[in-house]
Image (cartoon, rainbow over all chains, first blue to last red; front, side, top):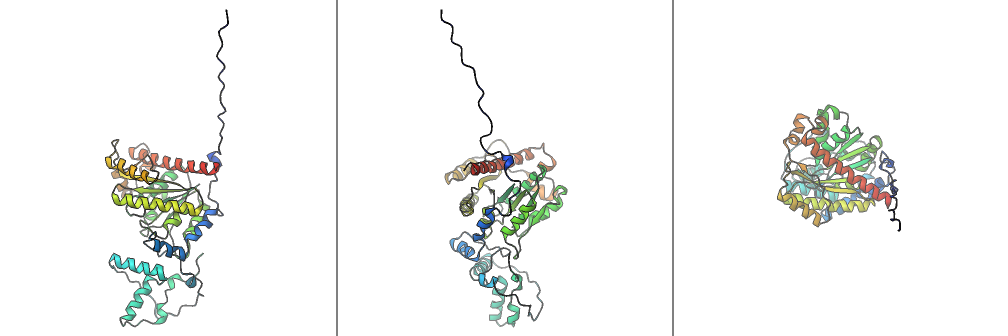
Length: 141
Length: 224
């Protein structure tokens, strides 16, 4: 009479981690992480113009829009304003604002200066020295 | 550990609310976090000032002197997490903030305009990932849907439409509840102040899925 075959023993598989543990991910994003360099190409005036042209950029954030390189490189001169400035707040139709922003993106002429130029064409007295938009003075990092 | 960008080229989609909730959940979990507010209305700093647990959160706002990338780099040096809230429009910041991210969340309500703009944002995110030469975790977050168990037909339809263009939709939706609308008035954040509430459970499910998405992407990147 033959012995009944015994079933083989079950062996536990290796369950140790095969991929990097999450705890190994650095806690902070390093300042020299390549992403900061890579994104530089998006923060140029040329990229802004391209974005506007392709419709990817439809609103220009004037706080962060890159300057035209020739304007950015201009030496900083002391202010020659004839008069101190005061703020002006008003409302215009949205499509007018869009045109002003688009013109700023295309030419680098700020909305303030577009308005001052238009007023001067209408006969308002505005000195050349007061046309200088000093909000963009200084170099960006 | 993470730079999280909330992006959607349509305004009023829920970016800011989700960003606020994300910062609060990171704080609830003992993480260090800072925020970059690219919305010109600057809602984040004002809100955090009203919540005692969030008063110390560093909120950066852009200026013509500093590039967005420089601001994010500085915030990331001081904090494990950086949350970026974009303006609700297709701006010059949109792709920059996305290309810097480890995770891009695109909140979408259920209208046709939300869908159209959500798809555009998704495609911009794909381009941003190519530019940054990294795999960036990203997902569509359905917001302001029914908070109950029964899912509206339009939600399933919306998921189908996003899936059709190859977008990943988070399984957990962000339900529509009065508590989220009241949050900026009451300074009461369910998952910070009442973790046993249904609203809290809802956002924690969303947050956990966001973190899982990001960790999965990190593992994929490591394996590659």
